[in-house]
Image 1: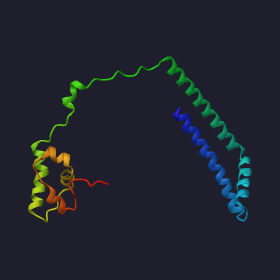
Image 2: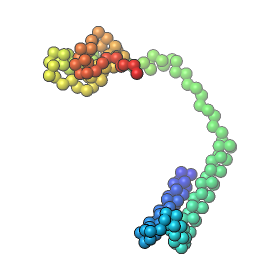
Image 3: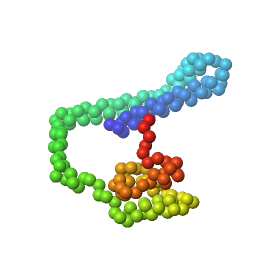
Image 4: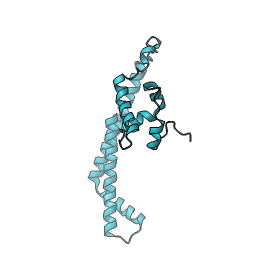
Length: 165
């Protein structure tokens, strides 16, 4: 069905392009004519290009008929082979496994070490990922609940808590 629609659209584009080229030719040959006359003469010339017009029309009819046939078959299949909805899945037994595990001590150290260095050395450029973690209050509460990043965030022009609109 998708292929039939794609080919139908492709042929429509081809026909429109051929028409536009004829109109462009008329515009170049007779620039003094008005827009409606350009369009009329372009269409008139395009009609004389019978082979291309017939090819486009024949292809459009074929692809439209193919799409209609596929669509009828799809409706027939849906009618004769109805799909039962999937059964709901009970995940309550696995609820404990859904919660994210806290980060390992090595990851916490990887985040807090550059932060501490930036506190002690004002010229130290803090990595972007550390700033991202420091500005995320819920993540900081999980990773390092006792760490206070407020002074460091102020130096970088950030606030720990998002401001309400």
